[in-house]
Image 1 (cartoon, helix red, strand yellow):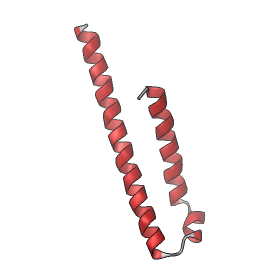
Image 2 (cartoon, one colour; image 1 turned 180 degrees about the vertical axis):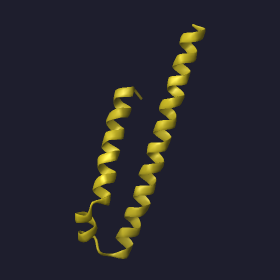
Image 3 (cartoon, helix red, strand yellow; image 1 turned 60 degrees about the vertical axis):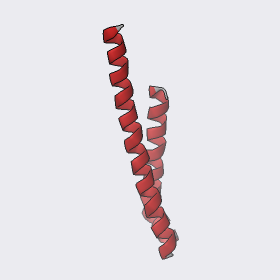
Amino acid sequence: MSVVGEVALTAFLDGLFRNLSSSELLKFVSEKQVRKELKKWEKMLRDIRAVLADAEQRQMKDNQFVELVG
């Protein structure tokens, strides 16, 4: 994934996470099960973001290695 794509995806996930946490949405969602599902999705989004950040760091290191060796 390109750096621009990763930045766009990160911005999208940040916005989605903020929306999931907004008080308006939480007021609208009053059922326990739905809140539980939202919490699972929030955790999943954090995990995805962490994996993407790790992949980006690895890609940068790999590119630096190739430039150094090449």
